[in-house]
Image (cartoon, rainbow, N blue to C red; front, side):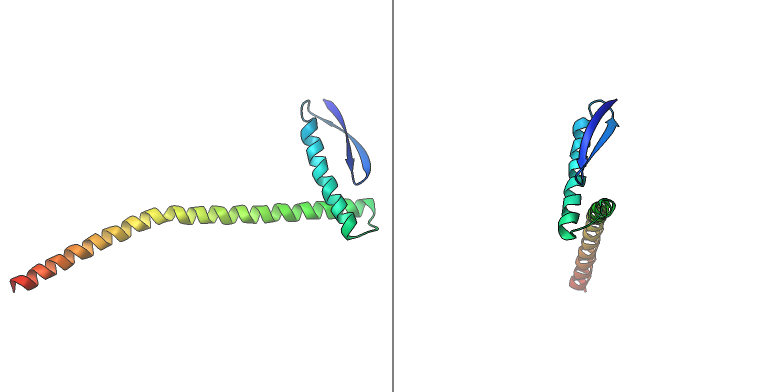
Length: 111
């Protein structure tokens, strides 16, 4: 296990992580630090706990928006995927209408 010192909301935190994950943990800590800074900037005078609470809320809001966007894209992809069978059905109906039209035209010519 590796040990890493992280700086979040102006305080140092010593954590353990799997060997090789130090850079990833530092990256995650930087994301939290950025959100904490954003909270402190927007609402000066927050306590450490409230700063971290607001940072967590900012990140939860972003995650929620990303999940919504991903669900919307998935739904759109599902709808786009359904276009192929519908297009084939319309083409088959158009071909059938043309045949019926030709048959009616032929009957009208014979009469």
